[in-house]
Amino acid sequence: MRYSKITLLLLLTFGMVLSVHSEENRQHGVHEHGGGQLNVVVEKNTLMMDLSIPAMNVVGFEHPARNDDEQKQLEHSSDLLRDGSRIFMPSPSAKCVLEQVKIESALLETHANHDAEEGHADFDVSYLFACAEPMQLKSLTLTLFKMFPLTEHLQVQMITPAGQTGTELESDNPILNLQ
Amino acid sequence: MHILMLAFKSIVNRKFTIALTVFSIALSIMLLLGVERIRNDARESFASTISGTDLIIGARSGPVQLLLYSVFRIGNPTNNVSWKSYEEIKDHRLVAWTIPFSLGDSHQGFRVLGTNLDYFNHYQYGDQQPLEFSQGKPFSTVYHAVVGADVAKELGYSLEQEIVLAHGTGKVSFVQHADKPFRIVGILRKTGTPVDRTVHVSLEGIEAIHVGWKDGALDLKQPKTVDKTSLLDLQPKTITAVLVGLKSRLAVFRVQRYINEYPKEPLLAALPGVALQELWDTMAIAQQALLAISILVVLVGISGMATAILTSLNERRREMAVLRSVGARPWHIFVLFMGEAGAVMTIASVTGVAALYLAQLIARPIIQTQLGLFLPIHPPSSHELFLLAAAIGTGLLVGLIPAYRAYRYSLADGMTIRL
Image (tube, rainbow over all chains, first blue to last red; front, side, top):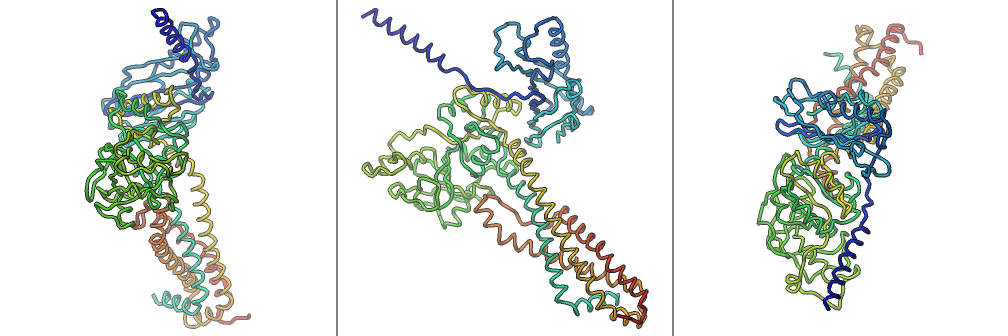
């Protein structure tokens, strides 16, 4: 009786583990080389941006660094990405200061067993600016296209005090109108 | 002054040809302004339907499709959202409020929307205007219904009236649930959005409509009565979409990502404003094509006018000679012809604008019924006036051709004509 209870418990546990494994995640986000996503929010005196671009656009490869050259390239590129006030130039009169940057990428993880979906990797970077004169925040100029020429276009979603809207930025149209 | 008088009399003399010319240009101007008006007003109407909502969540499809079926009741959902997912979204720490939508049924051609009381508290349209009751109050039990302003007006409904809600969305429903009457407890104030054409009931009410239905047909062996249904467990299993308001706008993209990567169910979170922009970008090409066509139609009308004046030139050489004989100079003849072109364009513009307003008056209720688009009647905008001025200017420019020829003729002919 006692054993059978334990067996049952084991079976249940084992069964649950099995079922967890069978619920493998088969959803995949889009990944387009040359493209990318930019989300922009302006709220009170905060200007927040989430940038998500394929590693291909940034470093030119999407696998973990295999040699010193690639490692250097990776470090150099992520330093460039971290430098938010060079990539994004808000209207100068708004007096925005970069306060926080967070960068995430499978390529930057030290563990080898990262989750590079189908061999693709992205850079997800979020930037937080504090603006002294948010009323003067009229536009956002991106030098991203110049710094990473493999990036051709960005799909933009933005939320400003005027409401939500969407647009697309390209290398020959790198200025986002925030009004 | 008197030269204009002469131009007018000359026009009256050829009233039939001129009237046809005016008619064709008036039609072309009506078309041009109509296309512009629909372009601008439709966009505004769409944009003012939803306000203050940070995210719309539904089954994974496309943002535009989600927006169209959930907010504008255009098209059909690809899938439903399970109640469990809804509850998890509702309880997310960044979510301030949610409005569940359950669509798919109709009443006399009007959509029935299953929702909860948060709808009346949080739904906003236009410039962040909340919904208001013109009579009554929100529903409080399963068999209560709140109708939009147009529903009440067109079907002649008043408070406390009992109505029957049918399963399905057709105007004619084969089987109506006469045994489950709903009572109207509230009538909403007019909003100029699809809300006016919606019958609102509780989510439990939607479930109640479907109790007793099995495999898409009414189970006649087990007729359910009103009382029994009220007591049954009417917790919905699925809903169509959710409108979400967040505690901070800074959280919108984080919650959007959370929903779009939701592992248990393929869901989509879209920003209504972004989806609307996407819809408009898609339609921009078609709209520009329409605008180009209507501009061409105006040009065709204007060249028709030039043709009509040019053809009349030969037969009017005597008229010119008579005018010259009473002292008119060649430039008088020139002004006369320009005056004619100007008069034709002006009369055609006024007629065209009048015809546009008439057409709008007739088409407005039909567009509102068929598409749920509210197109306001307003005085011509500055943009429309610019288009009108451009059309008249082009007309005058083209009018230079016959005027110049008449000028040349009158110089060459003098008072003697050799035809």
